[in-house]
Length: 289
DNA sequence: ACAATATCCTGCGAGC
DNA sequence: TGCTCGCAGGATATTG
Image (cartoon, rainbow, N blue to C red):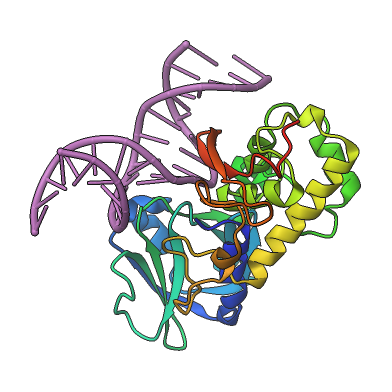
């Protein structure tokens, strides 16, 4: 499932589309759009892509919105921007093509761009969402406002992390998955972070000591960076915009490895449910606090 | 105020 | 072989 590293991999590869115009959009899964597809289409066509960025697991396209105003002096044109907000949820990803032939069976939406390029949105489970909002509405979107710290940003320091994690209670993995605390971590990287930090995913946060917090801080960043370096984790369907699978699945130590030997001590990894998510861990290497 | 549960959806692997 | 069933899961809406 696309988490921060997978979304980041796609965003970096899509940068060459900046400056292009969205000529036409079509879809066979119109439910995914906000506002409704007909309105979305009207508002997005003939707009230029100004920026492509990531926030948490969202891809944010900044688009031009050319408006004409009748002012006292005559006809002038004013520029405003709007944002296209995309969430891959479980199985979404973009693919680049030179024509409109679907590259995968599960391609749901097509964006015809200037320069003879098509952007295809593939999504097996149809959970992905595409939302177009004005710049002003974007600033007020609750799902964006509520997002927690960006773990790879400069201002995510150890002090900052300690401040946001210390007052929390409950299980460690639940906190790692909570987008309101730290944004971008999903089930794969949550298991990997707990394993690398040597902490049991069901540990109570309030029982973690300063050393545990520091290990966690380091491993949040290490594991996410490693995921990006490896161009994502492919378990099932994730590929980059050229259709190439990632490499991070080859070096996972915990995620979905229950029943297999621990790469450090050889103990058989166990599994349990935490926050409705399957969680794999080493009962010997990962201390439960 | 919070936590637990249902919801969306398709593909895959297990079991018979 | 071919069916059914359970499971996988991010975020949100709903219920307790």
